Length: 342
Picture 1 (tube, helix red, strand yellow):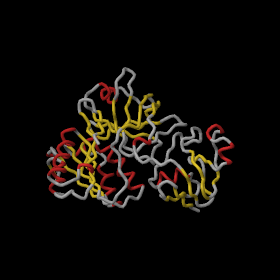
Picture 2: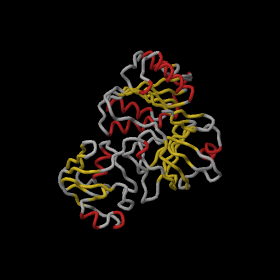
Picture 3: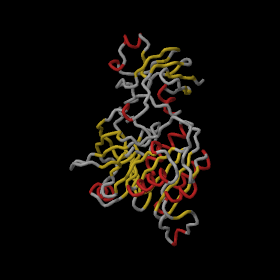
C-alpha cells in the first residue's frame, strides 16, 4: 500500500510505495530533499515526522541518537511510512543548498558511444552517494594536478553511478581516458559544482539546446523532468557535426515518443554516407526558424562557447527571450571545462 508524504516547507506531496524509504519516494517523484550516504550513517537526511508514523529502519546510532528519535526525528533515507505523513525536512531549491564534497570513486564502465566520445560511469564507495541538481558538474582531480570538469548526465534520482560524457579534445586527460584508463581505476573528484540546473517553478515551456557533449547535462535535466512529472512542454534541439556524433539518438527519440518531448536533431556537416534528410546548419538557427517568438519560454543551452553566445545574443535580441530566462553552460574545447554562465 502506498503512502502520501507532504513536506511542511513547500507543501509538495509525493507517494512512497511499499518497501520504499521516504527519500526513495521523494527522489522518484522529483522532490529533492537533503541526503548524503543513503545508508543511515551520515545524518544529512534527518528531519522530523510532524504527522503520521514511520518504521525507522536500520541506521547508525550516532546519526540518530535515541533522544532525537523519541522527539520524532527520523532519517528519511531509512524511514518507511506506516501511514500518510507530514514531514519537516530540508528541501533543495538551488545550488547553494547542496554540499560540495571531495570523494574517491572507481571507474565502473568505459564505453565509446561515438567516434570521439567516451561514456564513463563512476561508482562511489558503498556508504557514499552524491547529492546534486540535474545539470551540475564535477571536477575530476588527476594525480598530476589540475582539474577536468565534466557534467553529470544522470539525473539525481539515479545516483548509484555517476555518468559522464567525455569528448576527446586531445588534452592530457582525454589522452589518458582514451588510451590508458581501465575499468576499476580509482579517481578523485570534487562536486557538485555549477549553477546550470533545471529551475522547476513556473509553467513556461522549456527549450533545451545541446551541442556535442552539451547533451550530457541536458539529458540529466530531461530525465529529471520526466521523473518528476513536469507538465511544461519541452523541446530539445540537438546540434551534431555528423550522424555518428549524435550519440544516444534513440534515447532522445524515445523521450519524444513516450513523453512528448519534441526532438529536433540538426547536423552541421552531414557526410554523404549519412543519408541525412533532416535539418542541417547551425542548431540555434534551426531554433530561430521554428520558434521566432521565445517571449514565453525558458531556455537551457549547453555546448561550445561560440554556440552558447550566439544563442544568447539571438534568442534575447531577435526572438524576445527574457534575459533572465536564458541559462547556459559553455564547454571550452581546449580543456573541456564547463563554465556555469548563469
